[in-house]
Length: 593
Ligand code: AMP
Image (tube, rainbow, N blue to C red; front, top):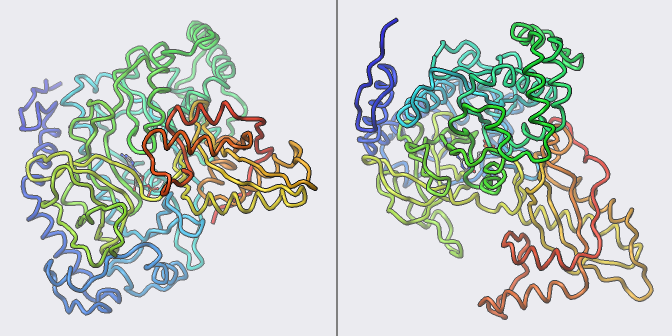
């Protein structure tokens, strides 16, 4: 076997020849940010020149930035909905893209309660795969010998549907895992998973998780990294182990697979590994039956060098829990992506979560940046958008993209802060997603949705002569799965009566029914969000909350009740005033779109 020698690159030492090529690609692309961006825009505009959308804005075949910026409006999903609906209904003409729309990617962002449908084209898979192929070469710079073992990754597919016109609609990761790009990926010693592909592709989430966990346990000493896409996914896996370790260790003891695993391809894949191993079963039993689950990851998978999970943005709430289960292993946030487009990667993946910056790769799409002024009343079209190469360190921007698949000047809704540059490519800290109040997993609930849910649920209190006078909320991620907590201060009229517990439980379920489809799917199909809880607080609590805010410098005139709280002293204050707590007694209704 040839002995690989490390090759030095400006990013660091490459682990092998292939890595060196990938790192060189990053260097070249980031060294020529503006040129690459100009070329990307020209390619997108020229290939789509005849589309209905570009014709409508009379671009006249121009492919330069000036014409593009002068003629095309900055848009949101709602602006594009008529076009998207036509494509979904079966109109195959070149509406947004000259290339045929191959499928819709269903975003976790919603519009009117439903997942946004992002049209995509076949070749976008190549672009996504290209970004994936850069991740391990960067990681190999910082963590040696990842080719000496495997990655235990909990990866899942989700339900897919067809649009009225017959196009498949599914999440971007489901599309990727089901593609030949993933299924027939060439062997890469640095990227070997313990999970058989059949287990990842099993649509039944219990069978998929069970078999992935089982294979991870069987190969526990080979595991060098443990991960999931988002932190919430990895915590779900830990919770699953808490609930099912007895069955898992019994399978290992006897060498027979639990009959709940019925998918033949999963059974076949697991059968290749599963042999009676009483010693391993005994080990798992003794580790999992201890009272404390501190460091459970490193106890079971002792060779784990890092966790591979996104803990930036809404996922930051899970950092303390992951630290507890992993004994403080590094958490690598490797990439930043969305259904609309994959954006970029973290060139220092072993940095602290609070220091993560993503380098947007200039070849992925054409990127513009809307200077972010939270209270600005100026419309986006009157503010000048800044190009990728020209953003300024320290400033915050909203990301606007133009993609090969046919989104033009589309506002993604993410707010990013520039932290530095790699060559001429800027690096961004993910600050937040606009308008998201509550998030446990991929769900994103905004203020209007929460208000509508409270309105709908509080209508159930009318027969009691009761109403909700004030409310706020919290995403409670302390237990797994996390859940929404809504604090209610109630007013019961003189002739009314206090609603009994059962009525308040119904209010919990009513709120859940009012939530968007991503929330309901996470509750009903995935079990990744726990039952919604209403905590009724004493009369006067929200006045105390205001007093507290004012004592900390808030203006009395401008004070507004925060509709979501995360500051621990405020949560403590609210919790100390709770008179009763009620949980949703059932799952809300959900069916694929
Ligand atoms: P979706 O389209 O459902 O895949 O969601 C994409 C969104 O997830 C992005 O626009 C971000 O708001 C969020 N997201 C993706 N990657 C990251 C990351 N690395 N850190 C923080 N948020 C992320």
